[in-house]
Image 1: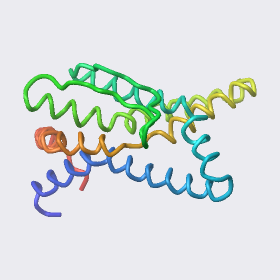
Image 2: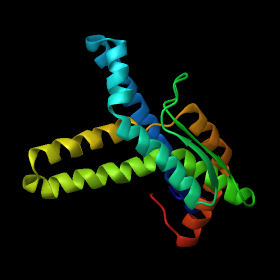
Image 3: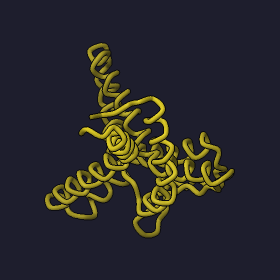
Length: 188
């Protein structure tokens, strides 16, 4: 592309939506995996495997929301790891604080937290397994793979997460654009 400003706009767009986009892809993959598993094992047992047996992923998911909400300045008021009603396994309630820019950042980053933190944690576990796996006992290797899979299965964004993201993403996009422009960074 010849116009550098269009390059900056597109670069900022890609950088802003990379993590939420990954969240959507992971969500679709998990849904597909769930459907295939349910076809063989039945819906009830599959639900148990994906949502109860992988409880470590639920904890990681909710703690990720709480972590990024807190780090960005929001006040976490409630964390629930298992919620018996509806589709939600758990949830985090928080109150955004500060001006419109800070509140937008808090909403956007808290919303994408399971994808962002899940990617970091699972990459760290995978790295540890590949570098030190040979020195681990079998039970340690199995445990790390269990945690790895549990976290990946819960690297998804709920409807509520997308609502928070939509409220915060316009301001975050503008911030990313300004950073891209100042740094003269482009992906093209």
